[in-house]
Image (cartoon, rainbow, N blue to C red):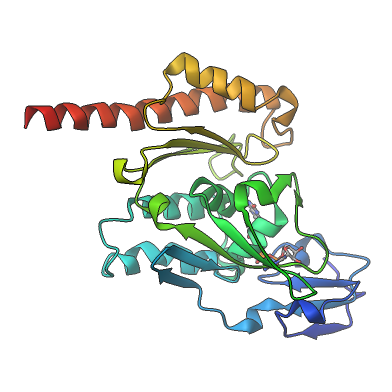
Length: 292
Ligand SMILES: Cc1cc2nc3c(=O)[nH]c(=O)nc-3n(C[C@H](O)[C@H](O)[C@H](O)COP(=O)(O)OP(=O)(O)OC[C@H]3O[C@@H](n4cnc5c(N)ncnc54)[C@H](O)[C@@H]3O)c2cc1C
């Protein structure tokens, strides 16, 4: 696709440099495939040299410029690091990366930040980071800084709360979410197709509060989170009622990758599978504990 109105490529990740007609450029897999008749300059954020992934005392910081390939490699690298064995939720990283069903080019160039900022319902980096209660750090042109959960930053199909000039700097994933037990479910209408439904369940450890969180993406226009505190985990009927309440029928996405009615039915089905998987393991471990 042509970008023949663009006259400059500027290596910067400073929002103070942003002006009308600019776009942040990360991997470019969206910018160069969708094209534009209005852009004048591309501000190349990959020039910032931010470390892709940083383990902190609070959890994991994923730079906006972290590529899908770098993220995919992380669980293996982390296996030999001090977090080994405790960040069970890293099991989600690879299925979420695989949900791109990506070519070599997309895999190695597209970024976590570019995916979240594009805000497609089937954005697997949105699914991953929203499900793990990731919080986006956003830099504004006037030197402002703000933080917002990814689940709230993405507000609809290709819509989000970023205003012109705002830069997504990083996503911070809290350690408590990384310690949780998770369940992943994804459906597509074709073998190598885009996600039509992608649900992730998370059961926090008792020490971290024991909350059950089910995050619905791809089937809905924006992420929807269902949260159940310890002691109030739902049964099948309670879960269905929670989905009824949280997802009105017009929130189900409608495009070539799936009809809303199918996405809705599969959302109920996969959510129930996740509930059963995570809460029955809880009962099993309680029972085992009792036997011991
Ligand atoms: C064949 C193919 C298959 C694809 N499959 C999928 C899919 O299954 N799911 C999906 O979600 N996408 C898919 N995409 C779209 C795209 O590849 C991904 O969304 C990718 O993650 C975008 O990242 P990028 O770094 O290339 O973004 P870019 O193209 O560089 O940028 C995308 C948008 O985000 C903005 N942006 C980038 N970085 C930042 C930042 N740090 N702060 C603020 N704004 C920023 C840009 O200005 C631009 O508007 C596909 C694309 C292709 C070509």
